[in-house]
Length: 134
Ligand code: FES
Image (cartoon, rainbow, N blue to C red; front, side, top):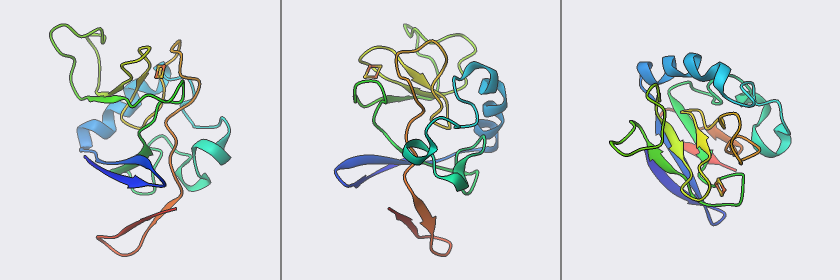
């Protein structure tokens, strides 16, 4: 995972393994907006309205700011020994402020204070190694 700055915001670029992508099928029923249908103009460009929330399934591009009150979630690829994450945690992100959790596509889990998925900024690939955000 790499973090870059865009318009003063952290943008995460996460390379997802086949196992990570498969985990999104398991979290489909646990997230609040599995198809990113809420307010797509603000949170998900049309071309990323799929379960991976991406152009290329291997790469998630998302703004790392919680949609509740703007804290920065941490990566939690596995639950730690004293973690409040469930035993079947598939990996994702945990907001330290009020406990919102997001899966590996930045989709917020149900019954969490964050109302929306992590925003996916408009972006495009310019050839194989170049990503343009904005
Ligand atoms: Fe993230 Fe409140 S700011 S849960």
